[in-house]
Image (cartoon, rainbow, N blue to C red; front, top):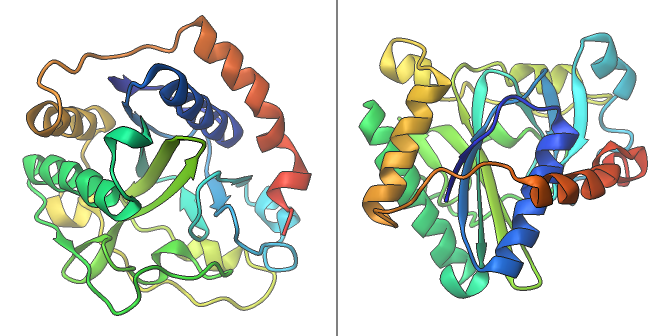
Length: 253
């Protein structure tokens, strides 16, 4: 199933992704979702320490919302980027490494359809430990890069027989703002790769979505159809929203 949603607030985006995770567990169906954000939003990884590291007032003064993701990884700014998510039952995805590689193949295919040639990073570290450092500081093993610079940051969460993986594809590099929102010194991210730099122009959300959806149909399911948020998914999203608007979750560590 393929889902393109309009820009939503950070908490709504995260609640909808978790609702899709629940749906995958119940129905056994996988959904590939593409989305953007209603306002600039700083998101934290599930296990990232943020209390005392980032300043909520500084973010508010700059018009940046804050949310904590259900997946792991590090902090990143959602503004000039496109986010994807994949939700699926675990019995269809294999091990974490296998499912990560399988989703990577879709992303590589979709990006190549846009005209962006990407490589899979292979540094010594398999994954980056949780810290206050920005997500785009450097690539972890398996992440997608252009000329050794990170273009796509991804993270996966598995829960009770289902998985959620989502990631950020940069259109422009504004990730330096992440360090500016910190309450203490954090490493400044090296210049990241961007779709704009790779293509020499700024692609539209619909152009990127069409390329990713074409990759899903080519590699996974030729009959994949577009899916729309129905009443049951709306109800589940509203139920889960409380967590993501609660400062006890956002600033829990």
